[in-house]
Structure formats: C-alpha cells, structure tokens
Length: 131
Image (tube, rainbow, N blue to C red):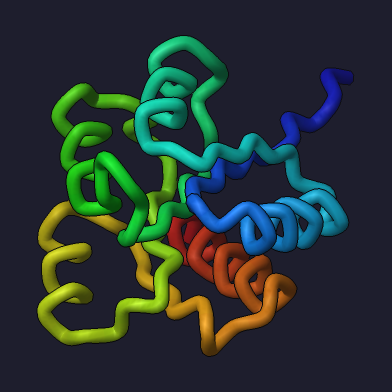
C-alpha cells in the first residue's frame, strides 16, 4: 500500500511572525508547508518544485503585490489544481471582487481569524473542492 500523499500548503506573507504562526498551525494539523516572504521566491518555487495543494497569499507584499502574484501564477499555469486563497487584512469590496476576478478560490481576513481558524477554513474549502 502506498503512503498517503501529504497535503502541501504554500504560504506567502512578508510579515515573518505571522508567517511562522500560520506555518505552525498547518504543521501541527499534519500538513506539509513551504513559506516565502517574497512573491518572486514563491513563483520560483512553483516553477521548480512540487506543486502545492493550497496557496495562501497576502495582498500587501513589497515588490510584487498579491494581485500581481496571482496574475503571474495563473498566466504561467503554475499549480493549476491548487486552491488559491488570499489571506490579507483587506476587506474592501473592490479588493474582494478583484481577488475573485483573478481566480482566487477564497479570501480570508487575517484580523478575523486565528491560525487554527485559518486551517479550519482552508479545510472547509478543500472539502468543497472535492465534493
């Protein structure tokens, strides 16, 4: 019998403390994680490495923002089967609409969720995707 593939979660956030908290939350819940503080590093990893099952990304990151990040990922066809989820403090309707228009599967507001809540919300989206 083959071992069950571990779900891989990619996290992109320039705030190292928050990134570490989310990594711990997903790791404690049994997920594999890779974490990046720049969109360029995350895209490089998507081009070369195992495709993640979930990509959580912040909108406000330096050099290449989250909107540009998801556009680049979609344009290059990177991680085509991954859930793409914005994890940001932006809750303005125009930002939420743009995230959806760019093809994100979800949008979570950081200030409203603990790391364990984020894990639970991601699990809920994964269940909807496989249903």
